[in-house]
Image (tube, rainbow, N blue to C red; front, side):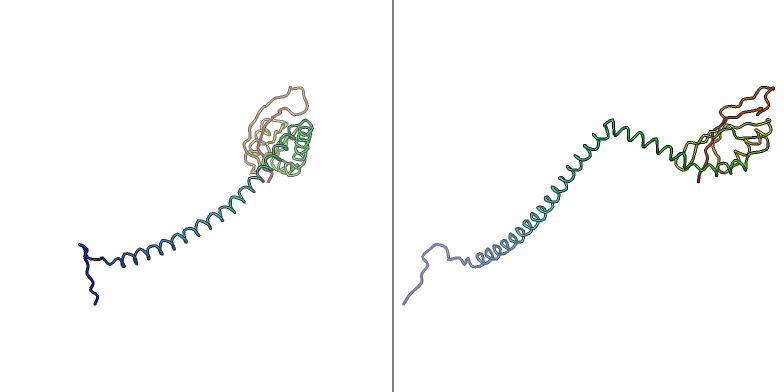
Length: 188
């Protein structure tokens, strides 16, 4: 017959619960490690695509900057400056041609009293409005004052400033008073 005797000073400990818990924790740790590894790989792969796209855009930016530098150097040449100056001159001529001459004459016809005539008109266009320099001849002070009052009451003229008011000699047969003024004219 066999007899089991424990001759040690301490009794034998059961280590199975510890080993089971350690094994379960190891399995959970491996699962977490696998999940984190997958997330890191996915992040690395998507950032790799982003890095490739960023480098492509940086290449396009570099090419466009080189083109811009080439264009800027071209526009600094004498030939290009001559063309730009000519284009600005032609645009100013087109702007002067687009001034509504018939409309301003119709508006002036409404406000000109008897004894007043327009000697010269010089417009400068600016965003739908025109600064108009007028030279007007009048036969008397009354007609001049009436013209200025009508001009101030007009809806299309504003900011009227009289620049010069000259009287002619007694012997002249033309306009006795010449008035130079500037006003803003609404072309719309």
